[in-house]
Length: 312
Image (cartoon, rainbow, N blue to C red; front, side):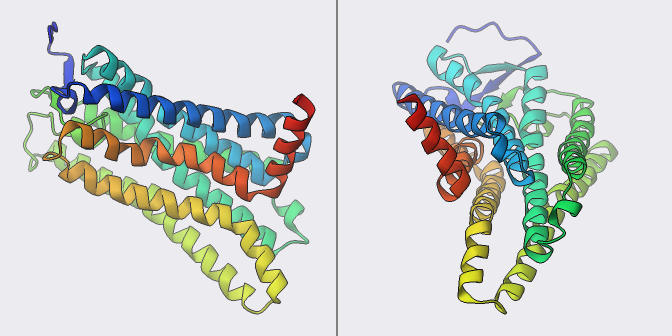
C-alpha cells in the first residue's frame, strides 16, 4: 500500500491486511446502508408530505430518524471508500469532524428519546389537556433543546480534544471516537489538561446519557403503575402506544453499552470482526428505528399502504 503520509494523516489499523475479506464486508455494509437510507427516507417523506402525520409524536420521530441517518452517513461512506480503495487514511481534522458527528448522534438520540417519552407520558396521564400542554410552539422548543444542548456540549468536548498535542497516528478503530483521538496525545493521563478533559467527559455522560435514561425509566415506571389500575383493553392500548418507543430505547441503550465496552477492549480483535461489531452502534439503530416504527405504528402503516396502492 503506497501512501504519502503527513503528520496530519491518521491510519485506521483495523483495515490493514484484511485481504479479500474486505470486499465481503464492503457488500454487507453497502446493503445495510442502502436499506437504512431507503427506510429513513420513506418514513421522513411520509411524515413530511402527509398532513395527518403532522403531530408532535411524528415530529419527534422525524428528528430521531434524521439523526440516525446523519450518524450513519458520518461513518459508512468513508468506511466503504477505505474498503474499496485499500487506503485506510483520514486527516486529523476529518477525524475530529467524524467524532463530533458521531458523538452528537448518540447524545441527540438520547435527548430525542427523552422528549418522546415525555410526549407519551403526557398523552397517557393528561389526555384531555394534551393539546394545551404539547402545543406546536412547545414541540419546537423541545426539538431545539433536544438537539442544540447535546450538540453544544459535544462541541466543547471536541474543542478540548483538538487542543491536545498529537504524537501518535494509528487509530485502532473502524471510525474515530473521542477516546481514540485522546489516546493519540503526547500528554500523560495525569496531566491537568487530560484530567480536565476526563472530568468534562464524565459530566457529559451524566447530562446526556445517565439523566435521560433515568427520566425515561421513571416515566415508564409511572405509566406501568398507573396502567395496572386500568382495564385489560386500556392496558393493551397503552402498550401499543408505547411499545415502539420502549423497544427503540432498550435497543439503543444495549448497543450503546456494548459499544462502550467494545471501544475499550477491541485492540485484540481482528479487523473484520472489528468492523462487523462496530455496525451494532452506527448502522443497526438507524436501520431498525424507522422499520420498527413503520411496522408498529398503525398510522404510518396505513399511510405507507395508501401510498403504495396509489402508485401501483
